[in-house]
Image (cartoon, rainbow, N blue to C red; front, side):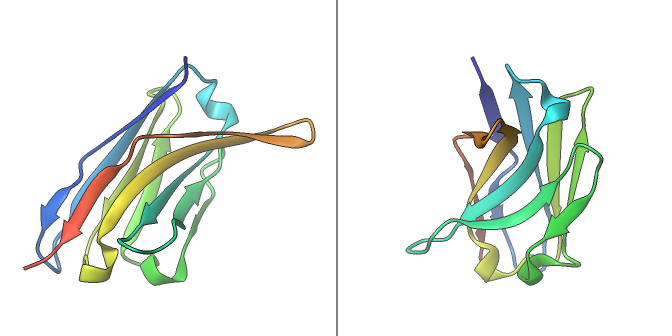
Length: 119
């Protein structure tokens, strides 16, 4: 059974920091591209950051320079270090694992962790 379990969300003041974690089980972790997505209230889910099995990272323009994604294949875990947080960073953050299988994409989602940036 595949599980992605996020943790680390919470309430933080503008300018503050948080570190999100996502622990995976039931998959060959090193074969997957891992990513973080967020969904703000009333908005569609959007990609925030992604990391390849070879540690190549990509970020949404809105978070570049403030968020850093990393992974440890041995621990089957990814992290999202968030700093200089803004109210617009508020949302539910979801962890995603994806890999190509033949002509399709196999993808799994975590249950999400809520980040609230507010004074």
